Every structure is written in C-alpha cells, then in structure tokens.
Length: 341
Image (cartoon, helix red, strand yellow):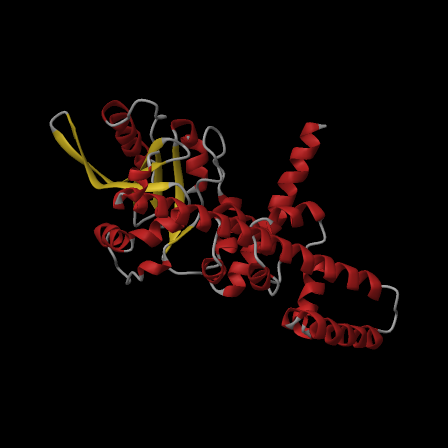
C-alpha cells in the first residue's frame, strides 16, 4: 500500500473501522474467557469448601467456618467472596456436580446466569435452561423471561403428549401450544384467532419454537377454478420445508385430514423450491381426538395435530402434568435402553 493511500480520508476511515472491529472482537473474547474463568473458579471454591465441611458433623461449626473464610477472602479479594455469594458457590458446586456438564455450561454461562438458575427447585429445569442459554446464547434478561414464561414446563409437558415421531423431528413440534398471550374472549371465531395471532406474531413464533419464519396468511390456492385459503404458512429453516398451519376452534374431526392433505399436495406442486423437503402440516385445534389421529396415521402424510390452550392451567395442574411427563420420559428412556440390549 502506498503512503498516499494511507493519507486518503476513505482509507483512514477503513483502517480505523478495521482496527475497531479487531479490538472489539478481542475484547469480547477476553470477556467470554473471563466470565468462563470466574464461573469455573467459583465452582472450584464451592466444591473445595463443601469437601472440607464434609469432615465436620456439627452443622453450626460448618456455618461458622463459612463466615470466617468469607471475611478473610473478602478482605483479600473483594466483594465477590462475601458470605451470601460464597454460600451460592457452595450451592453451585453441590447442584452442578457433574464435571462434563459444568465444562459445557461454563463456556457460555456467566456467574449472573448461574445466580438466576440456582433458586429453581427442579434440577431438570436448571439443566434445561442452562442448555438453552448455551445453545441460544441468551442474555440474563432473556433467561429470566424464559423462566417467567415457564418454557421448561411447557416444553416438557408438550413433548410428553406428542405422539408423532416418524419422519419429522418430534422436538420441533409441541402439544399443547400455549396461546394465553392472545387474550381471546369467550365465543371467539377462527378469524378472531387468526387476527390475534397476526397481531402478536412475534410471541406466536416464540411459542412455535426456534427456526420458524412467517411466510403468508390466508394463502390462496386455486384448484379446479375454486379458491381455497390456508390460514398460515411458515417456513422452517432446520427442516428446510414449508409448514402449513390450519386453525380450528373446535375438536379435531377426521375431515380436517383431507383438507390438509389437499393443501400440502398443492404447496408441494406449486410452492416448493429446489432443495426443499416436502411441505408438512400442523392442525391446531381447541381439543385433539387422539384415537382418531392415531387410527388415521396422519404422521405418515406429514400432518401433525396439536391442541392450543388460550388459558394457562393452574400452577397445581401444571405441576401435576410436569410430574407425569417426567415419569413418562424416564419410562421411555428405560424402554429404549432395554430395546438396545
């Protein structure tokens, strides 16, 4: 590069921008490494103190040790080691005792993330949110939102009720879907449901799950000179296929299968792009008819049926469903283990 080029304003601006990007990237990397190092350090401190305390039978003496050590560490290394935080380190080491899990989450979760997870009562929930935070690089604020929205309970309960597994990734779809945020009034119609979804499209997509992109509402299809309209059309990036969604305000009926099959075949012929998989369908009903769905073997045609709830169940009911879901999940794992033997 010539000296005259360096003196040119545009060249200097470009050089400055490149340096800024380089520095900011480096600062980010350093910040990530510092956060990871702190998380690991706090776990090691907690584990070391926990191991030390195991040698003492008197709980009162153990508490006094924590107080004394905290004062000494705070004096030398600052407020991070105050008694309250030190006790959190003990909790952290006790709850996340698996070293492999710890190494995974420490790469992406800061100590602030850990402090949000510690109060959760369910260990499965802690691990669920830790993994979700790691995969989606959630901020502390977004992690709190996920917990507040009971994403763990919704996902576990939903996946436990989803019977469709063949051909389509069962983790992509749920049953039920929680649409309480739509705030629908009694006696709503299908167009009210659709309008409410479009008004709160961002929340609806969040409820659908990661990877969904909105394409069109009331997709027009002309078949034999007659107009047909699909309620909602989405595209899923991971599945690489169109997802047709039909909204029903009543219980599932067998005739809905034929309607969705028609829409999917039309989409496959007229809308499917090169490199995409065949379109699939999701029929959202106020209530499913599980035996009918099983008998019709709808999953073979790429059609799923799921309920949507416009109101969240009570905390007690949700906890009961979660308890059943976890038991069913453990039983499935045991059956899979036996089948592999």
